[in-house]
Image (tube, rainbow, N blue to C red; front, top):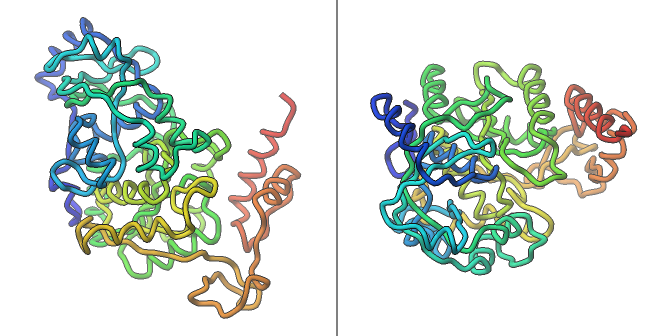
Length: 389
């Protein structure tokens, strides 16, 4: 195993043993079914493989309330985002402690059995205000909370089947598998990089600056549910693969996917992402500008400041904070305000609108912004999206 201890001390594995699996699967057929949406399926997958260690199921009220109010589990262990499963009042009224229910995907395939430990009410607006720092439904994370049913149920999970996926199979490494890969490569220090966007030159720059001081890089893009205007995961994966093949040392960088759904919770999600990367075996984690942000809900560096709310070393993973980076036309290189003396007029920048227009028109992005291989993939995608249906 890599030297990084999982969050809470033990890497959780919720898959039923081979000896128990057949009996459990047979029992599950006769249980009430709860069909999970895409975000809930992502949560189930991360619970099952240990990405959410030390959680062993959806949160009961003591964990939920303390996470929302204090960013800690009931045990006191740092945790910043609720991981919950909601039910209607009618469904909740029919539940009792110790009851088992089957959890299924949208095709009704049974994936797991949950033992109900507690059914409890919750305040959606309070969760929104504390976790997302806004109660506005225009925020995609808040909108997801508001769409949930009125009650929550917590309980431990026993998993029968992996959450099925048709794509990115070669890159779907579990925390146990990334840890084994790090050990095989003899990496003692590993920096994790979170992204839900194609990697542009500024991202590449901060990854490589970080890589100067550690043994290896885990490029760990999130491929769960994102908002509709984000670039699809399959397009992004082509970009990541092209970059890894052409611009990263093969013995010092590993590409794997994180099956999490985006919450867009900004500062709190930065903590959440760091904890998950700790479980995947990373010793370090990069936090740049506006991590996991959306719109103008969070300050540019709020996601860095929030880490100071925990005691030094309490999270058990070292953070690497980076300022906004850019290509400086005068320096002739990538830089940040920490390394470049020139003002913004020297920086090579394009608005998002201008970049989308260039891509749709088939224009290559400047090499100061994007590697040509990535730009070509994005151009092809933009043209496909713009073509008459």
